[in-house]
Length: 251
Image 1 (tube, helix red, strand yellow):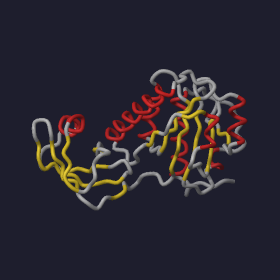
Image 2 (image 1 turned 180 degrees about the vertical axis):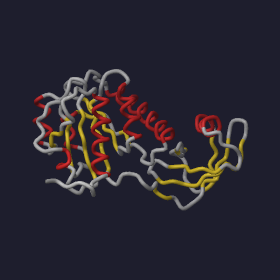
Image 3 (image 1 turned 90 degrees about the horizontal axis):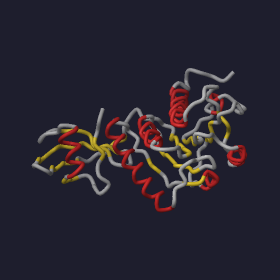
Image 4 (image 1 turned 180 degrees about the horizontal axis):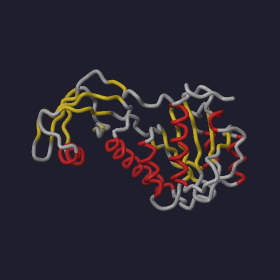
């Protein structure tokens, strides 16, 4: 179900006056009228009861109620996706799919085989675009987990990230995995970090680096997957295994 992402400047509870794109989204997309009630969510994932108290030609006023609550039914495990930046606009699709599949953090990564080589000024501009795309996807999909887009980083700086996962995996194009994915995920964990390579895959040196940084190799099968397909397949596989963790055991 579609919902509304409260502006970052909002400070609920209380009245909130909206114009521009927020007015357009509520009035022209969600078709809200004066007196309508709906759920609004802030960027921490807290949900509020909202009511349209006044509607003008180009502005509206919301009454945002107290008692925020977390969205029920969302994954307990926090997944961080370290995505090597692909060509063209494929990253836009990956961001949208990450929101829809419940990923908590996306870290855009520049690897040795990444075609885009952003300058420092371009990195900030790209990140702002990806944040906007993630917010649009959040509202459109009704996902209950706001996606954080981290700063663009080099693959060989992944070990410097402040919150490493309890489980750390990189999905490789070759069957070098020592264990099946189920075994990796049989350990109780609240945080999982996964690395997905670019179109050309991860280099041998990058594989060595990731192993030294504590990442284990995982394998999605012999089919050649596009990087945007690999990201979605990896996240979906992890989510399903975790969702059904009470119905399977490791032999």
